[in-house]
Amino acid sequence: MIEPGSDMERALADLRGRFVAKLGQPLQCEFQKLKDWLQAYVGAGGELLGGCNIRAAALAPLLSKAGEKSGLLASLLKAPGKTIEQKWAAAEDALNNGRALVIEGRGTEISGDKSKFANLTSFHAFVLLQVVEDGERKKWFVGFDPDVSATTETRELWNSLIKAAFDTQDVDLGKWNEKVKDLDRDRLHRILTTMILGTTAHGFGPLVRRYAIDRTKGLEPPYRG
Image (cartoon, rainbow, N blue to C red; front, top):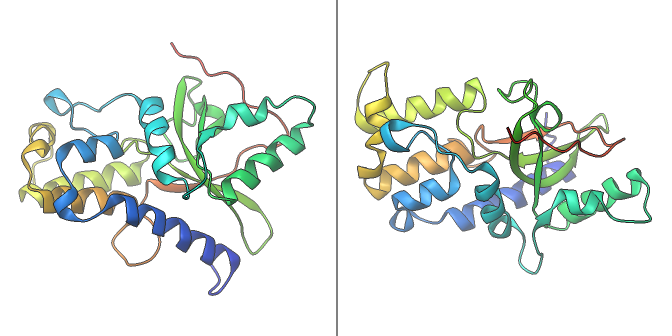
């Protein structure tokens, strides 16, 4: 629960503003922009796009505040001469100053419990954007994972948006996913912004989530098999 007027509410509103500014207006939304922002089912034959690390690295500079340089979380966690607590504190400061950080690791360590990656030791990457503290003083990392396949909620929203865009009730959406490239800019923008920002004037869609990451240790190198 986000309390009105709280530091969390202000931080998340500021973060949402960063997304709004970079997502732009429908006239600026072509198919390539959707592919740049979303790891979606828009590849050949409606297959899921790959390249989570490449996409995260490209989006992190866009989502950093002006004057702040994006980076890799791993670089901060390797800083010499600091305890693990100091390294995580430096990461928190960087995020809350507006510096987006790419996090790479094993799905078992960096994914939420509802993610399909939660039980996988293979490689995954997304963008960390903020650290917030709830009413019980528990700290959460806020991240943007562009992969629309990651959770049941993200998959269901993607499917519903595709059905609405093509006015279809087909169960198999493969052929429709492949035709997303032919949609007009208004529909592409609606899909993109709904996945990220949701359907209200406040808050976020299911691709922006909170993460409880163990700050008592570093991250294990991910398997890339």
